[in-house]
Length: 479
Image (cartoon, rainbow, N blue to C red; front, top):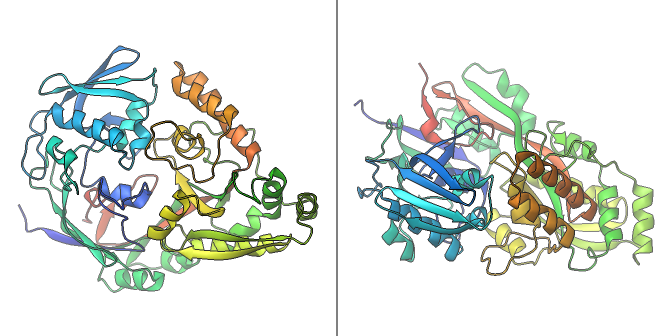
């Protein structure tokens, strides 16, 4: 084999961790990086079609049971052979220990190794989407699941070579990977918060890829012959989260006033150079469960002021607006534009833009009344966000991403019935109804469908997914 070629990616922010050890968060960039280290029973191809993964086949002996046949010859990066026991132990540890991503495995009642190659998974109820949810169920050695911290050992194309938090992390080829070896090794993710310096690293040839390209720089970059820019609408919707169990946002009139203060088109024009689409709901049209009857709310600032007065705030109110400063495209500019628009109706919002490593623990602790959040339903269906963000807390559930304090019986019913539905059509209709109910409650106010942009050296060939996830194993030298 030819000598390995290195690859450097200049990225805006670090991962929050490596699976499953704290402080790892259920954050798309972090999860995507971990996908290069770990595999799952099934996987999505670049077009988000389900494909066999660690399991080469499966069957449904009844509507609550899946039996998976594990591929032969798979080894972890440590050299240990993969068995059905490793798969069952990983599924059970994720649910029982409340690991990150366990919210995707709520439907599972049990996972048992039948023999060396077969795993039987039982669900609490019929689950049409179990296979899609299993794409988040990373598998590691059974003996590692009881260790603290858990060793970062998977069967993916790469292994973790080093991590210097805040500076860089380095991946190297997994010598035991079952598939074709990735083209590049080592792969260095260099943390560079400044957008100009990220771009310069690629333009000077010191990096091959830069993420989070500022949208107002796209026109100039697209005119260059030495680099190419990939820019496209993503699956991610950005929205405001309003803590409905705490004053003043516990008052529906105040939540409606916040909604009516916002002009989505103006927000996109001023904060994103016009390069985004306004959102009518928490998922874009490409996601199953999108409700075509919902429309983008328009501003009505006189009514917003009247509602505030009726709610006991005739002179307006003050509130802190939290958000990350290194997670979403132009996130700081978005926060300040939201604050400016809220000020037009008498809501004085103090912008608190912080590192995502601080932001996610802040909102999950319930200490943020108003915050900016984004969500990408990468399974292709709306149940991801409904289950995780908007369902009321479940007994025994160790991971709760409901940062809005919502507990609505009608919304819970729609989500639960969608999860237990036995036909695709009924599930879609229930998801659409749940989207409409979420809009009525205004615990989340959809803002925009985000545009993602990546700068790429012409020396690199890459066929990205719809999300532009930076998966180095999908990159190769250009011919």
